[in-house]
Every structure is written in C-alpha cells, then in structure tokens.
Length: 254
Ligand SMILES: NC(=O)c1ccc[n+]([C@@H]2O[C@H](COP(=O)([O-])OP(=O)(O)OC[C@H]3O[C@@H](n4cnc5c(N)ncnc54)[C@H](OP(=O)(O)O)[C@@H]3O)[C@@H](O)[C@H]2O)c1
Image 1 (cartoon, rainbow, N blue to C red):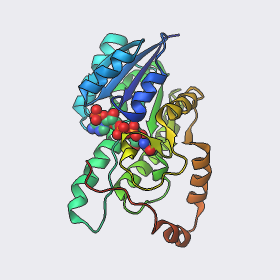
Image 2: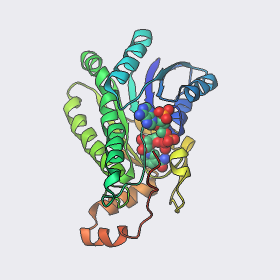
Image 3: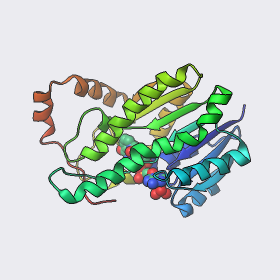
Image 4: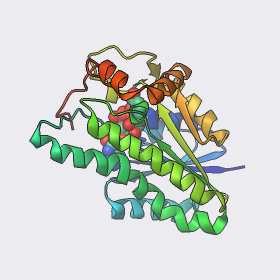
C-alpha cells in the first residue's frame, strides 16, 4: 500500500536521514525546509516520488501553503513528521537572549502546531493517520544553559500527550520521539562529550520502526531511555547538584 509521508526539516540531519529511510517505491514524500538547494539535493538521491516544499514552520501561512501544495498533488498524508527544530544555548541572566528564546519556541513548539494544523480537517474526516513530533531527552528536565530548548521540547512532549488522548477517538495516532544525542549539524558544534551518540541513519531506522509500531512516546537509544527515567524521578536537590556542572550549549548560534 502506498504511504504518503510529510517530513519537516528534511534538508538536514535527522529529517534527511528519515527521508532516505522512507525511500521505497511504496512511499511518496513531502520534503519541507527553508533550504531549497539542500532539499533538491536530497530529492535527486531518492528513488521514490517526492515533492520539495520550501516553507518556514514558524509561519502558519507558509505551512498552510506547503500542506495544500502537497495535498493538491498527492492527497492528505498518512504520516506527518514534525521534525524541524533548532537549538542554541540561552541564559536567563542575559537580557539579550529573550529574542532567541522566542525564536526557539516559534520553531520547536509553534512550528509543530503549524505543521499539523493544515491536515487536521482531513485527518478527522478520514478517521486515520499519524502525527509524529521529534522532541528530545532535553525536554525531560530543565537543562541549565539551554532553558529555551529544554522548555520548548518539554512543552512539546506534554502537548503531544494531550492531543494523543484527544485524537484517539478519531483513530488518529500520535507519536512522540525523544532522542538523545544524534550525529547531525545540530550537535557537530558541541565541544563536550555526548554519551550514547548515534548516527542519524541509525536514529532514523529506529524512529521509522517506532512510528510503524504506533508507539505513544519513545526515547532513544535505550541507554538514554533508562537515564531519562532516572532524571525524571530525581528529587530537585539531587538534580540541581548534578545539573549545575553539566555541559552548556553554545549561545548565539541561530
Ligand atoms: N541532533 C540531536 O542530537 C537531537 C537530539 C534530540 C532531538 N533532536 C531534534 O531532532 C530534530 C532534527 O534536528 P537535527 O539534529 O537533524 O538538526 P539539523 O541537522 O540542524 O536540522 C534541523 C532541520 O530543521 C529545519 N528547520 C529549522 N528551522 C526551520 C524553520 N523555521 N522552518 C522549516 N524548517 C526548519 C532545518 O531546515 P532549513 O534550515 O532548511 O530550514 C533542518 O532541516 C530537531 O527537532 C531537534 O531538536 C536532535
């Protein structure tokens, strides 16, 4: 059966690897991003049918146009993967970081809503489909030095949980993926050790399997899943002690 998959952030890293992972004659891919050159480069490497859609997830109109362009040609997608995201260190003590904090939320949180929204009527009507968001292990507890990124992913995890329950009665599946460190341009600039770092291709293979299984929330790799569970239950005094000397993401990189 032909599957239509709409992927944001396909121009780089994990999104690119997901598109490659879904490259089979049974699939049709919507490839979304701002960098048209990269999207066209990816499209050239794919054997399956695909459509390049230059759009900004932070802008609802841009995403509506991209979604309608895809629907007009191929119909509503079976799977929508909101993968686009950005990361930068931010500090509460730096007043000038406010703008970047808003930007991170616009892309990482509102960007997911803007991605799903144009498909909602079709999903409700057909009573099928799957919405997937790429969150992060960084969303499990508040990470000092990356407050905006951490909070945007935490908000996303909770939002996805809310809509998972809301949409169940319409037979719409909702899947959240929280990866640990993945080797992509996003992590390339990190100068600190990244435990359990995995390749984008490895991550994509695992994520495609998780999506297939229609899991609710999966954390990968498995080592990070165990660490996340421990992080989640640590009392604040212990978390504060451990987190205060943790690695800090570089600021001003967006
Ligand atoms: N790498 C990791 O260790 C890691 C861990 C946990 C979670 N994640 C999450 O995984 C997702 C993919 O990240 P990655 O590691 O693959 O990073 P990446 O290589 O930097 O790719 C980010 C992608 O997001 C797209 N994007 C960013 N802003 C956008 C916007 N406003 N509109 C449309 N597309 C936009 C970029 O495309 P354009 O530049 O073409 O717009 C790019 O394709 C993100 O949500 C990230 O938070 C990554």
